[in-house]
Image (cartoon, rainbow, N blue to C red; front, top):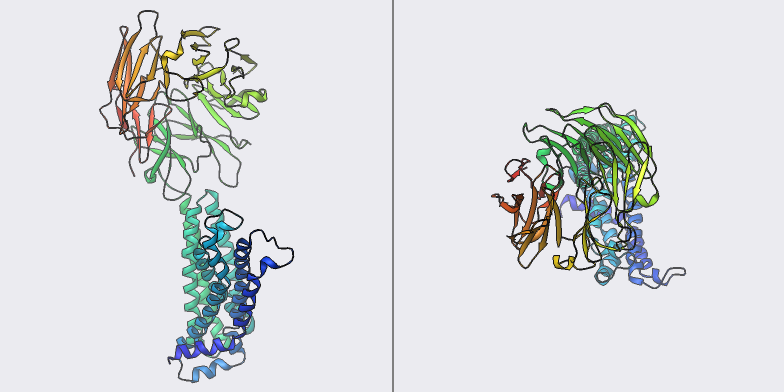
Amino acid sequence: MTPLWTVTRRELNEWRPVVWITGALLALVWSLPWLPGVPADDPAAVRAMGSLLVAGLFGLGLALLLGANLLGRDLAEGRLGFYLSQPLSAGNIWFGKVLAGLILLVGSIVVLQLPALVESAWLVPFTGHGASLVRNPLPILLGAFVILSLVLLLTHALAVGFRSRSAWLAVDVAGLAATLALLISAHLGYLRYYALDQRLRGAAIWLIVVLLAWLGAGYLQVRRGGGSLRLGHRWLATIGWTLTVVASLGLVAHAQWTQGGSLHEIERWIGAEAPERGSWIAATGIGPRRSLPETHLYNRDSGASVRAGAISIYWNNPVAFDDSGTHAWAFQRDRFTDPYLVGWKLDATATQLSIPLLQLSSEPRLEAADGWLALIDEPKVSLYRTDPLQLVGEITPSPRAWGSGQWRVLPDGRVRNVWISSDPNAVPFLWEFDGQQETRVEFTAGLGPITWHQVPEDLEEIYFIAGDTLYQYQPDVAPEPRALVEQAAALAIRPGFRHDARLGVVTLDGAPVVATRGDGSTLLQALSSEEPTTLTVPGELFWFRRPRATHPAQLATHDGEKLRLFRIDLEAGRLTAQESAVQVERFLWPHSGGVFVGGSDVAMVNRETGELESVLPRP
């Protein structure tokens, strides 16, 4: 029999009552469903949840009790010196006692978890109370074992300190206080930018490092301190708390690392926007430091980049560009602050502007035009002049205007909203605010329910189907909608389809062009006053629009295997299509500014050639 096992067996014999207490608690857990006042409709879940609770509480109490009596009592009573006089090394004594404590901890936790382990097989098909907690209890058991083992060792350190009554107790108090402060700081650092996955990894590494540190410190306590309580406490306190504080500083540094990051680290892009002019682009993606997105501004010409937000909360428009591409605006916030507005002058390096703190709601929006900025924050709309930022006017629209509306700041400073309800019987309207007063126009009065509509991003025209007629409404051109097609059924539109890709409409050279989905192909038809012209392109209609007035119309089709991107023109009364020579990944989703986003790539249509080009560096 090895000396290590001799010490371990002796310790287990001394703690034999723990076995009987564990057995009694196990019997209590099994009998929980029959106790008065306990719901009996789901006995399996009751036992499973009971075993988790009892195992946790008993394990914590046992770890505290074992830690308080691991070596402290032997040192105080002078028995450790006797052990060292025997043919037992310091390692045998220390690790034998620790091993006995860990066996008792593991044994009691596993035994008390038997109901959860057994009932988990029964609970897998169910979704009742507590089922999700016990379907896979092994990670819970492993985490509980590591945490309780550390509790045992830390309790041992504190117990030795109190028994020694030496000045080195101040090291214990200071070390414990510093460790708690650093752990809170690290937790807040992770939480500030939602680095929850990284927090779990950092905590796991910290637990293992600190556990090993206190195991080594306990060994040095016995090896260097011998039977002296004060000398052993000095070694235990200095080595243990020094390594613990260093590990905690590393955890804080790791939490700070998660708050950084550059555009080049992004592994998966999920959104992007670009102004009508200029070389800057805003892209939102997820990198290795956090599990939620962040937004970056990137200059396609110079390669300069700046982080626009540590986390993109506002999915509709994380960055608002003005059309000239000279300014960008975004919200920033972290877990503990209200959102505030930040601006950039888009020169070579995106100079940040000084923006006052704004108290905002949970989902504000920004819309910008040349020299104008609209802050849309329910229930208030605020219009600003920019450079410098100056409030022009504010208004509180009626609650109905806050439905599923689309917002835009026009070049002359008007804030426009197009509101079309999902209820076909609700009358759509166009709402505007010029900084002084608001106007509202119900543009479909008397036309009947809308079964389909499309509103381009510039909000200068609206297409919709009411009854069996396709209409075009241009509020800055004519006060009433104009009928484009009397028999909309000819455009392969079925009533009840809304916001789908069966129909797309853009205006080219003043003539509406309609794209409809065919059988394996897409039909384009120019609806001019002259003889309509048509064009058939391969692939079924996927997406069709002109993001801004100066951009070419873009048509995307798919054949089940890949996406094709076309530039569509109407010249001399004839439709022409120019297919991009660049291979387009499947399911690259279009965003504002003619930007396509898909996985690790962001591509944009070249305004000069109409070709699709990658605009962001790959990670």
